[in-house]
Length: 329
Image (cartoon, rainbow, N blue to C red; front, top):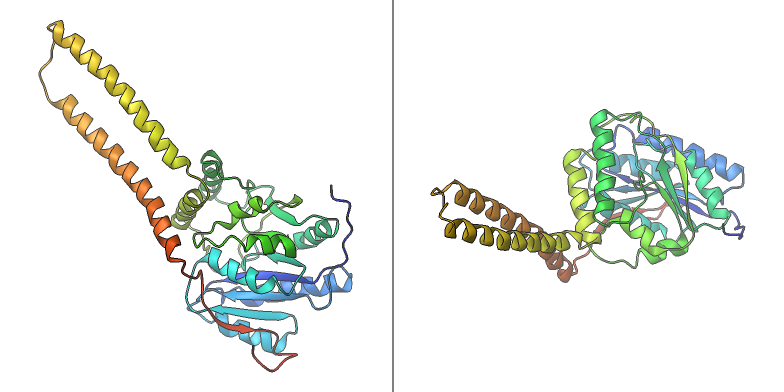
């Protein structure tokens, strides 16, 4: 365990938002109250702040963020020009917070993650840790399907060679130096949960119980979870390509064995006329080839997008607290 005792940091809590008009007021109120008590307890500096990132919402989320910036001294707002997805919105918020804070926490706007865990995260940071993962200790609040699919997601990622913390999403604390190193990973197809462990630095975990969503709907249904899994696997490992090579080798060996079998049957005079086995073989090999081409195509597509070096996101507006500063940056 690190022995360093750090001073109270300037804390930034980064909250990606997409169509969160139903929960924003509750989210801002709860996080603001938490930040106030942490300042009173001298756990963090008085100029700590909340940074809400609007990921191209189609509702009144940005209007509510602007209003909060006008009335609250601890609120900042960042608006992306279009919807870029959760991971890009999170990176945008982290990049904006990195120069301003010594410790940065990311949390989803639905506040299903226990916000009191942030206090323990800061304590771990002050004891010398640079990365503190929030890990769910149980999934009793999830449906059977949600629980099974989520745990299957983590096991699939582990089987594919992606190193990440089990039952950890994007609720974590990063020190300024850890975040600075994380932002050096400039690939467009970024899977943050897999990148953070690559940064290194002393890390630890804090367990918490996840609650129910206050309002609105989940932003990670099965379709998006599958897309996230594909993104994570193809961004972090080449295991699928190696599996294709292994499958090809196995089929070649089976083909050699089948060839010897056919020759033996032919010379023994027991040849059975018919086409079903041929048709089945054609369909099987065709399916294997199409699947293999699809996996290879996914990697080629990733290479194509990376070579363009397009920006991950575009910032339309960045508001610091208008309650203490009437000029917009």
